[in-house]
Image 1: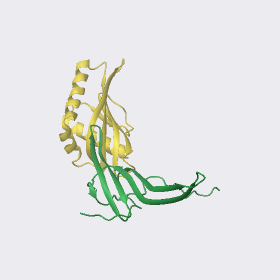
Image 2 (image 1 turned 90 degrees about the vertical axis):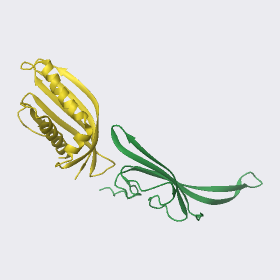
Image 3 (image 1 turned 135 degrees about the vertical axis):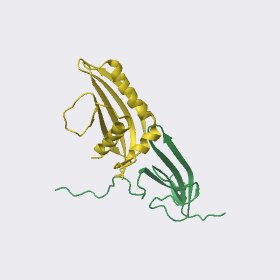
Image 4 (image 1 turned 120 degrees about the vertical axis):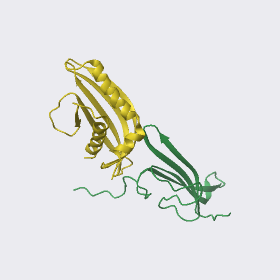
Length: 111
Length: 134
């Protein structure tokens, strides 16, 4: 009897919407590397972690461009900006939408 | 059974809206003796984004006439009557969404084809539709 794998998921788990096609999240961090006398990197400093991503789906959309909540689990804290929202209609399919976001976990919003 | 529900809804609309005398109506799930002239509606649904309530479907509407007992013009007239009725999308959507177990969001014609053999004229109208269950 093989063990049940538990390290993968199938389907949408990061968004509560009912008609979500896809969710993408990319986590990034910048780095500053200092090379030593022998040419090898000797010191490294990482800073400015950011998260970005997109959600594609159908149905009612409450998200608008600006500072807001992307509705994606794991994207919390700091400031999240909905950078773009695209709504589409097709002649032989359901309407759909897509929005993109950037999350700056160490930032605070200013007006 | 989802397919049967949308098939039944379209059959009901065509049957009542056009009042086609002598035409037999079938859905893809009915095991009946196939008598001509006939209008058969078949549907093949797939879930939208994994939903249990909203679906896409490819609907094929097959119109058949007996080749020995009817003229080509009669068959063409029957096809045209159905095509014209279905061209009024707004009215069709309202009609189907009244009293049926499904909610039709919309549809779009994608193709039509005509086959003729020694026994029958057979025209297929295919369209894509989006619907939900109530």
